[in-house]
Length: 156
Image 1: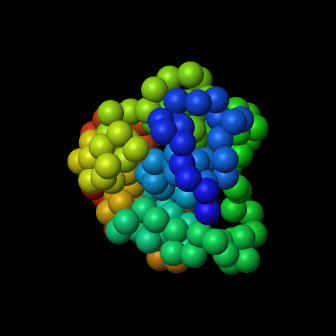
Image 2 (image 1 turned 90 degrees about the vertical axis):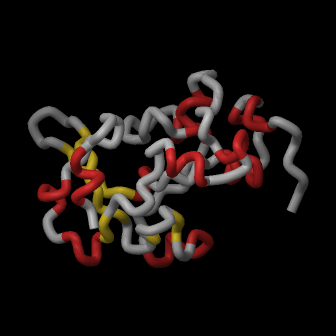
């Protein structure tokens, strides 16, 4: 395991080591939520339904290292993929850095703690439901980018 460079999060995404890339993740868990695509418009609709491996209380994967063995369609985000997918939240550290924007004030690399992200309402921890108990996804639509989204309180 290599050392993380000082303020590596300010560097171009393509120059980050694998360890730095993984550390850049803010851990919000939003990429682990199921999405639906509107057949007529192609719009991606967000839900509050999490992958079966996501710990809904912490928004952390229960088996990140082996996740593809249990969830074959789980995507490993890369600098190239981050620049092409449309479903990552606007608050995502990868998205923000790909656009040349700074990390949000609540990011753990700036604060030293994931608590600031939770307090800012940027995490899905405690605000989502596992796919193992959710039922139909269309009953769980959410707008995670909307402040005060009512679905946050209804999850779980």
